Amino acid sequence: MAVRDIFQAVMGFDDAGTKILTQKELDAGTSVDTILNDGLISAMDEVGERFSAGELFVPEMLMAAQAMKAGMELLKPLLSNETTGSRGTIVIGTVKGDLHDIGKNLVAMMMEGAGFEVVDLGVDVDSEAFVRTAVEKKADVIALSALLTTTMPAMESTVKAVREAGMATRVIVGGAPVTQAFVDQIGADGYSADAPGAVETARQLIA
Ligand code: B1M
Image (cartoon, rainbow, N blue to C red):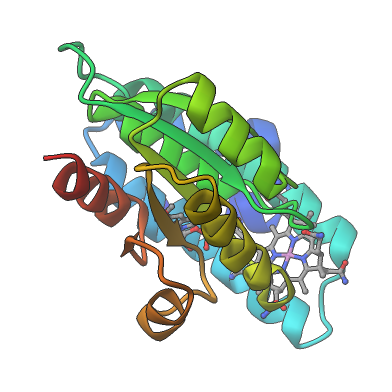
């Protein structure tokens, strides 16, 4: 199965191979969803499991992430293909203390694809920067990503900062450790477990 080769290329930290195989699959008509979920994302899940088992270490996680990004470069234009007028403005970032950006980038790409104007603040973003940028850009939604249990509290402080600033901007959150129970606890406006769901949540909040 050729998508499995993409999985193997990411596991082999092979940026060029991942790119070539991703292009090959696109040319063969394989859907972006299949390439993403069965190839790229499932490789990152496997990397995470091996890291937890002590079989892989941080440098290997980083190299796998680079290979995944090489594949995602080719998918980006396909995820960002809607050209109609803006549906609203999203300020997105990974919260303070957290350097994981692949899931956040995927959410940003899909938001752009769905017609939102996206301001991406990157990683390790403090609550002041989210608030300041959202005010400057008159954002409709602030989208927060966190991959570490230790950085989830930064989501809570960002929601608090937005409320204290008296802003109408809605806050949505996501990332592997985030649950609906946590979202309810911190009083965020929306949550999704994946990138397409984040787009849907933003759409519903803005409608
Ligand atoms: Co790190 N890391 N990492 N890591 N890393 C995890 C997250 C971990 C689960 C691995 C493990 O132990 N099994 C673990 C966290 C444990 C925990 O807190 N519960 C972990 C750890 C411990 C660490 C370090 C602390 C390791 C160390 O230094 N000892 C360190 C922390 C650094 C820091 O941030 N301060 C660290 C570092 C790194 C690298 C830098 C090496 C690298 C990141 C590179 C990069 O992002 N540029 C890395 C990687 C690659 C991973 C794993 C293997 C893969 C993450 C990923 O990109 N997945 C990860 C294990 C795993 O997740 N299986 C792991 C693919 C991506 C598409 O999925 O980001 O989950 P994800 O996004 C999903 C959803 O979560 C959702 O949509 C996406 C899918 O559609 N989503 C949203 C994400 N954001 C959203 C926002 C939304 C809605 C949905 O709305 C706004």
